Length: 393
Image (cartoon, rainbow, N blue to C red; front, top):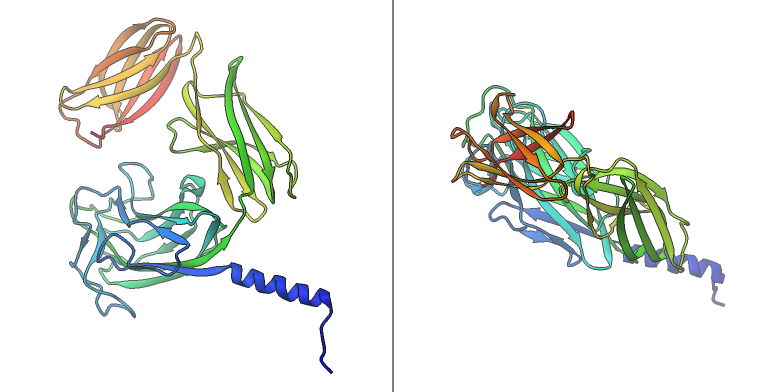
């Protein structure tokens, strides 16, 4: 006589088996023989080339210099990736700490999480003594992991567990910092090899079906409105704002109407009571109950009050030695240009007409070079506005 388990037990077994087969492990490896990954174990994952970020001068990115061969178990030797790093603490600017970067994306209808990372590292006397991993999930604000590096010119394999939430597409940056002494420009003092990451990928139904996102300027405020046609496993929405459309900061949060399945149209509202002058960019970040994030389209709005001053955009022309600033305002404005050391470089006064876009040409000293950071102070109507520029052409 055969024994058949109760239907409830069969359902549990089937559901559990389905869950196990739905999740798939993956690994990605870069052996630095070329920028592209040397191996991706899953067709559900796409990974970018590895790249340099904020190099102190010019170095050969991939070369066989200071090979990792036989330095640790599994070392590939031959080429490795190099950076010239400035000394000092972690500074995430265009003239700050160096980093290696790569992007991981899940195939359509899937999401992924990272669980571990291994990488060979070599740091010289002036090279980094600390390293951290950041991601675009929070605009590279909080580290996913931080560790130490010995700056003794020896290779060592770093192997660490990571704790991340499921995502769809993320850029990761491995920063090196806390070097001491005086690093030399154009001289590599930090190298990595055999970067390997692993994690899980799983299918997912899109948690939100977006209908629209719109912005409206009303009484010196910006009203943000968005609507969805369907929601599932939705936890909350974060409202983020940017002055350049790239780096966003969270300015508010609204709970979802329900964390179950919602199939009717839902409309949400948020009021930015202290918006930026000039052009601002907004996006909505939806968060699942398991922590995965889903982003709306990015919308922009120009906010120009009668008594305000704003810079719409700027352009640096090193050939003619001018900083061209396109701005709006009303009345007289006094422009002062400083370098990062606080030295006044130039100043001039201009009269702006209300509602008109006015180009201002500010002369640049011959000593300024590509990569220089400038601070411009604009005095208008007994107020001051501060703007930072990087010469990058």
